[in-house]
Length: 248
Picture (tube, rainbow, N blue to C red):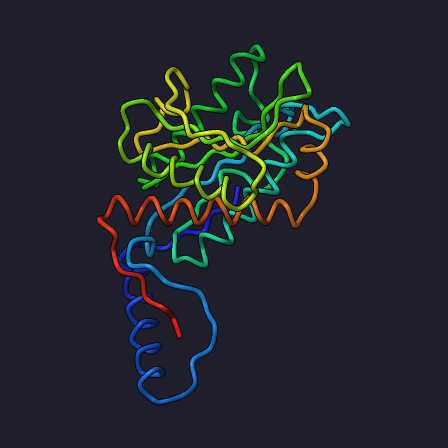
């Protein structure tokens, strides 16, 4: 487990220094250069990114043997980089092929899974995260189903706002899903986490064409970028459309 963590106060101070420096550079009359947009809303926001499954739990298995735990980890690592560039404080639940139940855990498979999920939620709760994002892949007995889809906890206004924004970005970026974000009820991870939580099913490994796409690093980057932009859009909307700063 790798954690990118600094205090909110230090992060805000560093951001303030960066913004002042950028403003001074802009006033110097130097020609602007293309660079990312920094948002007051995302700067300092604590986001926990959970790569689903891991270790003995492979998750879904694709038609050609692709393991969900591997793709979810690759997507999560790319998403982390995207959000860090937006000024977020990012905490990754895992960055290796492991789960959080512990090497010494003894119990049934069901008990291990519950302990693993509880540990993931506990990590987010301890760090007082503003958002918990769990990345997964879907599967179905029929190979015809495809398309990324985002879920949020029923009754959670903030989660719904962010989840819908993420889904809109997935639709507009990938152009291969018409699915809508859905409210979910009874997800253990959502109820165990004390902050808004979204679950992104990035596609169906049971669909051979989508399985092949999800193995492609360029496509993974498109998915991660879409999720990151959706999170930023959702946070801005919840904050009332806060102004972004063009870092030129």
